[in-house]
Image (tube, rainbow, N blue to C red; front, side, top):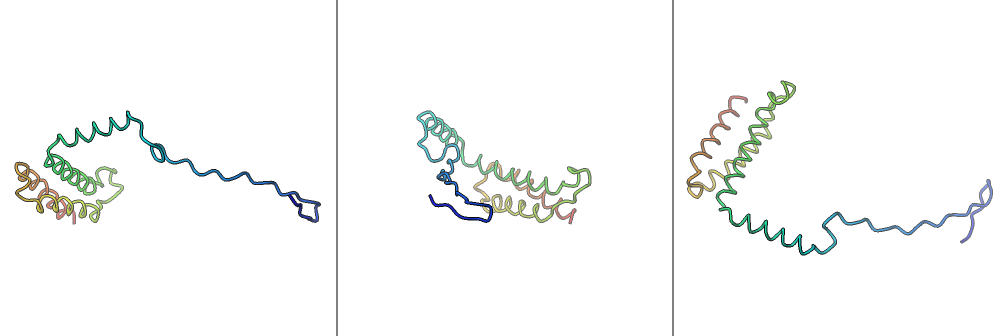
Length: 128
C-alpha cells in the first residue's frame, strides 16, 4: 500500500475491513424449521375454523373501539387533549363501510353492529 505525504509526516492509510452485509431480521432470509411450519399450519387451521362473519364482526367492533377512543380523548388524557374528530370520523366511516356495505350478510349481528354505529355517529355529532 502506498503512503501519503502530509506536513505532519508520512501517512499510511489503514485498510478498511470489508463491509459485512446486514444480518436479516429474525425469521427472514432462512428457511423455517419444521416446528415453525407446523405452528403456522396449526394457526391457519384455527383461523379457518372460525366463521368469516365472526372475523368481520370483530373488525367492525375494533373500528368502534378506535373511534370511541378518539372521541373520548379528553377523558382519557384528563382534559389535556381534545377529541380528534378527523381520526374518529375515519374509523366511523370504516365501520360504516363494513356494516352498511355488507348489510344482510351480517345477520344475526347486523342489528347490534348498526346500533353501535349509530351511537358513534350520535357522539360525533354531539362533540362537533
